[in-house]
Amino acid sequence: MPEWLAAQGLEVFPVHRLDREVSGVLLLALDGEALQALQDLFRARAVDKVYWGMAAGHLEPRAGELSFPIVEEPGGARVSARGKPARTRYRTLERHAKASELELALLTGRKNQIRVHLAHAGHPLVGERKYGRGRDAVLPFRSRRVALHAWRLAFAEPWSGKKLAIEAPLPADLCELRERARSG
Image (cartoon, rainbow, N blue to C red; front, side, top):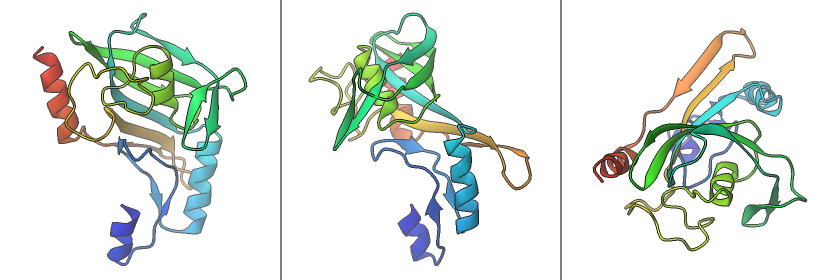
């Protein structure tokens, strides 16, 4: 997206990152001052980051926290006692026969954190090829990505203090996956 905006004559700076396989809200800054102020919010963990995901099976309990240390490595990440603390809060939104729709909130921000946590807990995301440990997909997913969407960012603007929430609706491929999960 920054490349597309640059082609339109706008110089923008990504404030944070999303995995290539993830859709959703991406915050961009228009100048260096805004970039620094917004990145400071992320470093201070003053930004609520909420994701929608569809994972294999049913997590128990229906809401809770995944807290496994993650070590970042070239090309990925994994759970390891030598890793840095990583915490992901989850809540089941809807259960289907073979999968669950989840609301996921990042309490820390490690590389591939949601994907690693869910796979380690035995509930990899639908479409997960990297961390799924060779398990067959519980639902066929025609997209070449994981069923994970950065649904919402919320924070207080650093220059005004005004509360701001930015949301992105589920894209068509995830809506179609949801409908197939509901039907069986």
